[in-house]
Length: 189
Image (cartoon, rainbow, N blue to C red):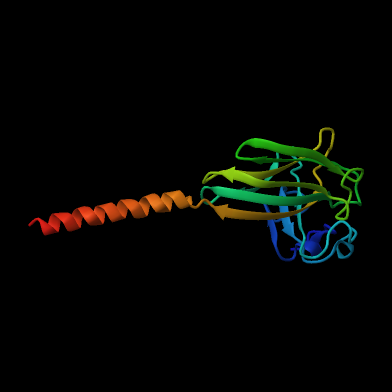
């Protein structure tokens, strides 16, 4: 339902929130349906199909989380930018993996101010165990009355842990010995 918020055209598909009122209920995660210029912002704020978040006005963090499905190796690359050029606010963003801190930045008009100048952070060959989380946390910065919009683009590559070749060799050798033992037992009867 259109509630008077100029961002409404961007939310017509892909809108996730704690409630249906874009003016009051936050946090929000939106896969934008239109570019910023069609929703009261600019196209350097976001383009159709971008994912944008609105940090909670309460000051609580909004988490965007990926969970490792099994033991393995994860590579990720992420871009986070300020997607709300029509106001002058800021969010604090931080990233952690399995509870270990990876980095943080303040996202505002003055720093990482649009999608052409994002905060870029990545990690390669990071070992994870099943259930580990890669967490992106967004909180309105201290002194801000309201949360704000950030764009987020994350690419994750996950490789499940596979046994080493030596493990397969030991398994085959064990099966071979088991087969010989059974064959030897059958011949003595």
